[in-house]
Image (cartoon, rainbow, N blue to C red; front, side, top):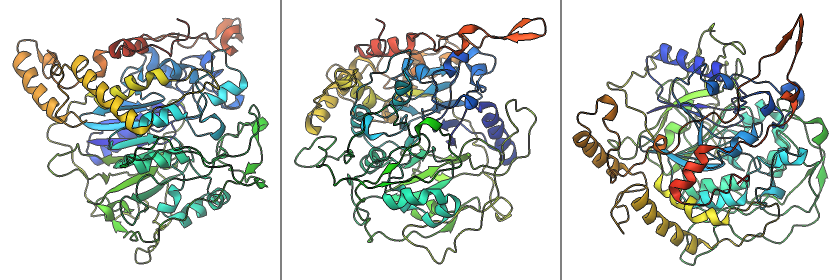
Length: 608
């Protein structure tokens, strides 16, 4: 399956889809799926802008509202997560995930779904240590502090995600903390010298995200947030630090927004990250270590590429140093990939690794989108993923919000004969790529793209819903890991029987990807769906198929109105006086349907 990955969207959907169309025409292939790694900015109308934490000069509707109102439709299935510049009120409506527009699916504050058997998990928001243990206390209308804390990731969601069995793809907005040491750090610092202080202090990135990376070991990890392209490879197992490495330190969010004006100052605490199963069960998130020595305060160096809130700049506290990385891991070999792009990904085929790729924001001459090939598990032994083609398009004329983006020229890569364990080359520019690089060809039969629920994630959601905290300082006693996994095992049986139609008391014999169940379901659908027309082929006709289509439970519904046109008064324009006020809360029928399917309390709708 060809999957396009995009970094920060910033409301530029028209340009992103136009760029994908250009790549498809130039390279003679069809992109099956688009994944967007946050800062999506799903603004339905002017009042949603009042819920986005950015300076007024950045408050623009963008182009999402056209897809929301039906003026346009996404040309391919698009799955997104949230970042730190969002219509947070809309994303709260769909806390568990749902359609934000036709053919556009929000993964939720945390979630996991399947696309044709490929498991895609993700976490929305960014990390902020003092909000990590808080509940979801924010309510409309948002105070200035609530408008910022609502997108800070919570321990509750990290605990839930840590219970997943290995997904193939993981999406985050933040970078995992310390990921820069698994790629070409020297090249990164040449391009982004203002990262140096954060790297030296060990605060670049999110500690919980690195904990999840070590625990889940996904094949791919995609991120954005820092507005640059960066690739890395994390080796798992012996010689690579092992699984469940505890990374201490705090990320004070200085890269994009320092939103501490509304927070109570406190001494920095080591941030707990997920552990992995051990013979002696331990909590899913370890108990914090004792507080470190009094902090040293330093002046931050500004990132000229970030969106700053001028009233939120602050000094940065140095946390304890991170653990020293293992030096026994083999140094990566840099090889030329199938498209002529030099990449460290190609030197690790067949190894137990996570390939990390961060991308830029959607602007001209930025590395904001690339295409990768990802194969479903067990498909002819082609389970390894590889970097796809990404060439420079010509400007197009169908862009409405800005000029069509293009790929930048890159600096020459490091010499492949001089690798180091923490370095990787920059990609070559299209003009430097070998002329003989093969062009991917379209598959003989384009697969029908199917978005389905992940049974394991539904079981985790059902097991942990009683623990979902809804107040700022609500004390929560989470179950230890052994108990949590047993709870999920029991709920997996319930989900299989009630949601997926498996036999009474019969736990699914296929793996969490549901591949065996899907194949059996195809046979049933073909035999029982005869005479129902093309639309009925392969669709779920009876229970027992082993898969559950998302659209069978959740259907897109406009909850808020679209933009209000300017009212004309002679030659003068005047706006609706409510357009600058925060909107009311809109209960979303999709969330109600999801909770009803799992027979859980709808804690998202606080108006009930």
